[in-house]
Image 1 (cartoon, one colour):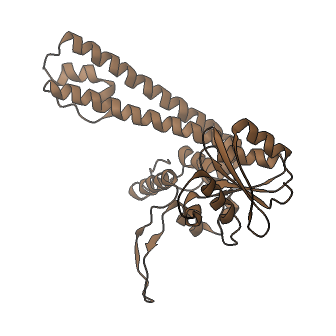
Image 2 (cartoon, rainbow, N blue to C red; image 1 turned 90 degrees about the vertical axis):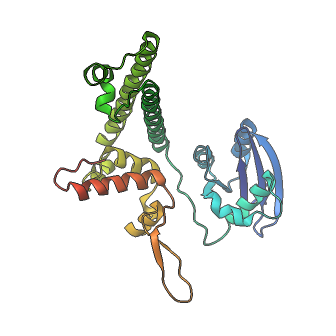
Length: 296
């Protein structure tokens, strides 16, 4: 085991495929382990470099490796693909990860802290509530349309749907359908409360973080954007300057140059979609209403 210079791990839900390379790049180790046996293996292995793709569970495993004294490296999956040889299987993937990690020009992903991942969970749950609320409003609107009523797309109207029906629309609704609408409307109101709860959690995190307060001094940046930066940007030192960060988010022009002729297209839309969306919404708010813009 002392000959292993770098260990590539292909991560799955319950099993892990390991391939070890020596200092010259030759394969000297190959094994398939369960999650429990993997932890025992890493704890009893001499200190080495452990590489894996940046995917679900990789940040947790990387922190475990660091706790055992190993050097953990996370690689974006798209940078591993060119090193996959011939057919694809789990051991070939692990071998490609080990080889990609040895490249001098390889770009690695910074390991997220536990608190950053918790913020990501809060944001994902909030996003799921937003999607459920949109779907709930669409269902109520489609139900009413089946009975001859075109419901306006507005949260104010949705919150007072029954007053709207009586005041602005005289179409009768069957009693059983009215009960179904009431149940669905209660679900809509519950989702509103759940979203507000998630917003409060994010606000509390931002209020107690010095970096987030500094981010909020930027026009258009509010609790959502600041908390997203805390969760998604593991280490600001990974970026040489602001333009590099903008390129990582996908806000810089996409380049398609050839024959010495530079050609810049629209924004690349690469990288972090959620963070890019928040920055664009914040910029739009500042441009449209510079004096009354609401930070996002």
